[in-house]
Length: 170
Image (cartoon, rainbow, N blue to C red; front, side, top):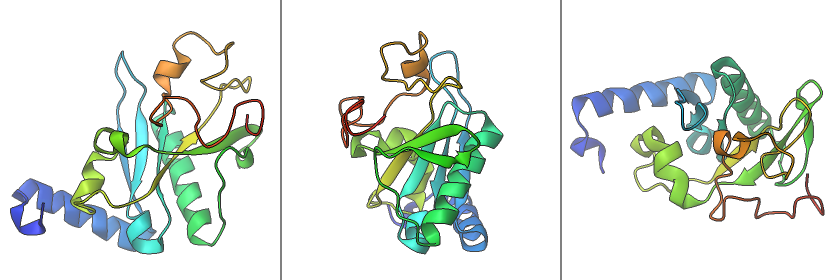
């Protein structure tokens, strides 16, 4: 959809997202959870501004989600390269974060308003995955009941695909 085809509300949101990304490096969109799924936070504009994948985190409280996504974009924009399946222990004190590529089939659901800036969906995206406070990942057999539903893995299979859990990843 071209900018001319947008409604006034869509055009205003697009302009706000671009202005925020131009000023801060990326815009943040936060979506509340419900009884079926956790809240999620995603970036808009990181790809446009810095050529780094947009990011999403699911299941964290609002402020924590925005803090994590902003930290990822800031570090990636500064030149840090992130690998999928690697535990990064310096985002939150004592709690690791791992990245996985997002399957394009999830883009509309989890990056909907990013399509106002990237109408063709031609941007890469990564998911920032956070374990429980006891460092149990959503795919682990001992994960708390409902954790995998609260923080789904946005690959085609719903499980890590860039690494093998317990072999070359968490």
